[in-house]
Amino acid sequence: MIYAYIENSNGKYKKSAFEAVSYAKTLADNLNDSVTALTFNSEENSEVLYKYGASQVVNVKNEALKTFNPKTYASVIEQIADGTLFVFSHSGESLSIAPYLAKAKNAAYITNVIAVPESVSPFRAKRNSFSGKAIALVETSMPNLLITIAQGAVGIKENPVQGSEENPVVTVAEDPHYKVESVEKSSEKLNLKEAELVVSGGRGMKSPENWGILEDLAETLGAATACSKPVADSGWRPHAEHVGQTGKSIAPKLYIAIGISGAIQHLAGVNGSKTMVVINNDPEAPFFKSADYGVVADLFEAVPKLTEKLRDFKG
Ligand SMILES: Cc1cc2nc3c(=O)[nH]c(=O)nc-3n(C[C@H](O)[C@H](O)[C@H](O)COP(=O)(O)OP(=O)(O)OC[C@H]3O[C@@H](n4cnc5c(N)ncnc54)[C@H](O)[C@@H]3O)c2cc1C
Image (cartoon, rainbow, N blue to C red):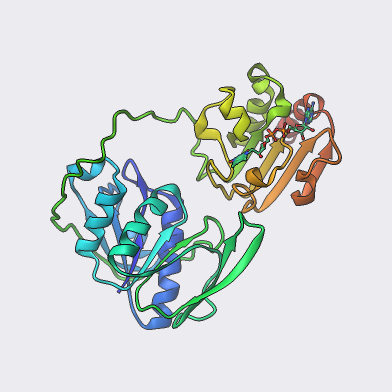
């Protein structure tokens, strides 16, 4: 049995969940096995997971699991999942659950996988390493295996199967060492992790008052907004927008970087983007080396002009 862990946000499946199911289905087809999608307190119809190849959906409905605790989640998965192969997303949530489960299952743990496996048994696949600067080909012959798959790297593939849903009753042990004191909801209009278009600003924006031009561009495109770490650290933008090695890792179709130098720690979170456009007035800015399109210009002139042109185009 191959398990795909399905993340949901307020009961709605995240895009990365469909990638996890699609990937698990590829493994299942190779091993003549089937996929069980495992989720907590989902409010969505399981049909959508059958469409990507899950023939069983285990949706654990339990009040105690409405507060996220990685250790508790891992112990519940351990209780109900008797499989040997587990597919997770390479996201903050999954990356905090998976190591507990890997330990409990005495499993090999391969993170940040970026391609379908070259071999399923033994499992051999490519993974991102050194913040996306290198690709490693890794192999394991351990019988139990957990993998996390990089967002946007392997894609979503429809593979409809007949499915059924189960809602098992589980025991949720209290964790005296873990307490959520408060929850701060992100103010972002569009979910940055899921957005297909992202407009991002760095220190070159000079001050938070200047963000209006970036927001105008984002609104015209229907894009989410992001920022570099120093921008969030200075309180110019909320931390929920911080992308990079220590922030969110995103893989939109289009990433527009405005006044961002392109430090390796920033690129680590955005280099999965399909197309990168960089606007910077320094032709030597390192970001230009990674960009698909570069505009050497003063952002305060270029960005409003770009927005105007896009509005004309849309009109
Ligand atoms: C352990 C560690 C983890 C880190 N994690 C992250 C992370 O997750 N995310 C992250 O972003 N950073 C991270 N950093 C910081 C990173 O190294 C850089 O310092 C940071 O990304 C720089 O942010 P910036 O590009 O906004 O600012 P700067 O490096 O100051 O770049 C500003 C850019 O704006 C351009 N500019 C200035 N004025 C204009 C103008 N008028 N028009 C056009 N362009 C202009 C400049 O040419 C420059 O290239 C981390 C660092 C460390 C050590």
